[in-house]
Length: 305
Ligand code: ADP
Image (cartoon, rainbow, N blue to C red; front, top):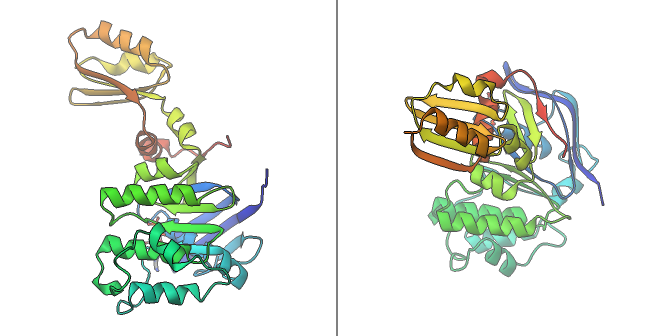
C-alpha cells in the first residue's frame, strides 16, 4: 500500500499575539486518509488548516505538505480548499467564477463536471451575491474541486445546506475521496464526521486530545447505550466493569457499556418498575462529549488501529 505522507507536523505552535491557538502539535496524515477535525470553537482547527494552506506560518516546529513548505506553488496546485470565509467577488456569475478558477490549473475538471458534482445546474448565470447560503457553499465546493486536487480541505462545508443538499454533498465527497485523494474536514456535525471520516482528530485548547477511528472512539465509552427512567441508586454500576460511563440526571439514567445483556438484567433486578428502557449503539457524539468532559483531561487519547 502506498504510504505517502501528505501532511507532516512536528511540534508546531502558533499564537496570535497573546492568544495561543496551537501548542506543540505533532501528527502525520497519509495519502487516502479521511481525517475529520472536531472540537469546540476556538480549539485551533481553522488555524491548523490555514497553516497547511500556507495562509499562516508556524511560530515553532516544522510543517510540510507533500514534502514541501506550505504555500509552495506545487502544493497549491495539488490542494483544493473550501473555507468558511471565501472572499470571492459577489458580482461575478457562477459560470464566470468557474471559468476563472479553471485557468489556475493545468488540468482542471470540466465546467460540466463541476456543475454536476456541486449541483449547480440552473444557477450558472446567477451572481454569487444573489445565491442562498447553501448555494454559495455549493459554488465554493465546486471551486475547491476545480484543480482535481489530491488534498481536499473542507471547513464546515455543509452548515448552510438543507438536509437533502447535505446528504448529496456527503455522497459526492465520499465518492471523490479515494486512495488517491486525501481529505481534511473540519466540522461540528458529528453525523458528517461519522459519515465521512476514517480518522477523527479531536482538538481542544490547541492540542489534539484524541486521534483514532470513529469505531475506536465509540468503543472507549462502551459500544452500547442503555437508557431508562429510574430512581435506582447508580453507585452499584461503578463496580460493574462493563459500565464505562454513567449519566443520571433527574430520573433519567444512561449507561454506556461494553456488553449490554448482563447490565440490562442487573438494572431490571434493581428496579423492575423502570420505564422507557432502550438499548442502542453508542454514537460518536457520545464518545465526543465524554472526551471533552472536564474529568477526561488527564492526557491524550491516541490509537493507531
Ligand atoms: P477553531 O477553528 O477550532 O474554532 P481557531 O483556529 O479559529 O479555532 O482559533 C484558535 C484560537 O485562536 C482561538 O482562541 C481564537 O480566538 C484565536 N484566533 C483565531 N484567529 C485569530 C486572529 N486572527 N486573531 C487573534 N486570535 C485569533
